[in-house]
Image (tube, rainbow, N blue to C red):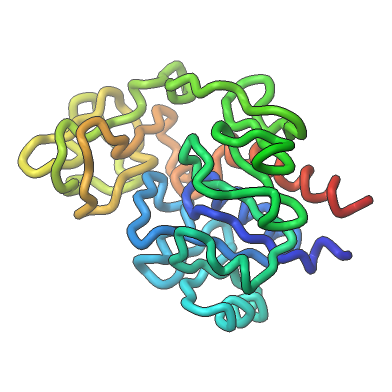
Length: 266
């Protein structure tokens, strides 16, 4: 079987799922992504799940289109597009019969993916065990093993700390100070200084801790819980980084591609 004909179902449409989708689409694989009715992506500029709200979403030259039926999935593929549908349980797999299922929800637990879902199933990060839940796990922790294909066992434990960029880790991320409705005061791509207000949760301000550029930001009107990640600041201040897949995303996507090629190029 030519890998360009493979049908790939990706559960999730956030940043890492979209990085994987971009890499596989570049290799001419046919992609369908499934999402929840109200995705809460932070890095929205590089997340195909934004098509749930806008109908279409482009990331690095690849376009995903919101569809509602399996027939529309094939229409998208015929136009060279990725298909995305609201299907939290990935029920479409029963009709589509994908060659590969990739769980990229990043829920830190398995929400129902199994080795019976496709000839090859892949889980990103913790919550999966290769050889039991899925055929392969891709390491998502930053460090020496990022992007490694694990064919037996589990990924490294979650560190609970954001990756360090230009010397900043947890300071890069801003979180909801209380439960309520998130209202933006800034946009992705805006330059900020430490202490600037970037949003409000009801009337409570959300401030950034470091200077840089807003790389990720929840949609205006998103319901949030106290402590929920609401956005991040990139201290490097490069506008292009807001609109392109991260180094982490590319490494993980490379691991997924390796797992697929190793399975089908026998």
